Image (cartoon, rainbow, N blue to C red; front, top):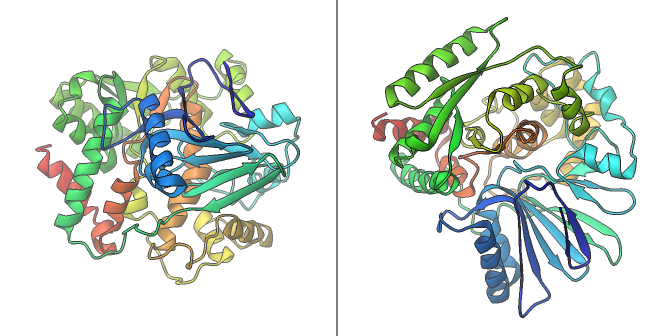
Length: 445
């Protein structure tokens, strides 16, 4: 499908959710690609949310609009269009990826390979980094810092916005968060933070699932059980099917536990449960031929993408309980107190690559690109913010993009009030995951 919005052109798949509204008093249009959720009005449609944006902009201007968009949940990219300007603002963790060209005519797209195909870009220097003999990660590799498969393509990071001025052909990527009123200082009691989390999480989960049939990725871990507990509270389990993926030919102890625990929990709650089988890569399969068109370079987990496509219904909504570790501590070792490119390289990989000058140079570029300095991040801990912004944009968003070949994936934890509630506790309480455990206990779950 195709729509002209002002002086810009949007092309999208027929199944892509696309909403637009135009101001009657300002030269201003609002576009949402994906599924935004307003936790203060969980029944609002994407079109109604776009119309709210128009009203807020007309009443409060760009600062009020930015605040409203920043606290939306769901999975989306918001586009603000004014005369020669277009701005792109991602959802909380940039779960809906937005790549853009940095050379020649401006293009933004959900996949770097799509831009490369249009612009006829060739794979660049990132391949050498990804295939470096010293880069060895058992859990899977992904591109560091600003690197994408193509030198001429960058991506929009969480907590940042992208502005393109077509008049002078100028592109600007800049941080907007934390906002002046953001409050994530670790001063709350567990009771205070719990109430904030409980309210925001249940509202967000309701907005994602109300009136929809959906599937939940369920493991033996705490995060997906929090989502299941929330669905139980909302009396939404009758619309839910749970699934757990596994590899029967070479199962790990963790995957075996996930399968058995998820199956038992589902059985106890009378929720249908499906085991999704991971198969070996088959480059001659019809699926892989299709997959390689979207992920010719920079693939993450093609076997999982194939399992989603072949073993789950298409056009469903699936819930994946990632992103919580922004608030519950992903990087436990916080030995250095100053931000440096060398430190970020160490947090990116435990392999020998971490000390290579080329990788450290890339993280120097990253620090400048996302304005990753203590002055710009207020009272947030940069370890939390690095996981929030870098790992989620560079690693997790590929997961959701690959799943898009089969269905649309959303993340119940992906809303700023939820994350701020988790971050408002002392580090020890966050590491203990006190709020998540209490939520399950209070759900009689």
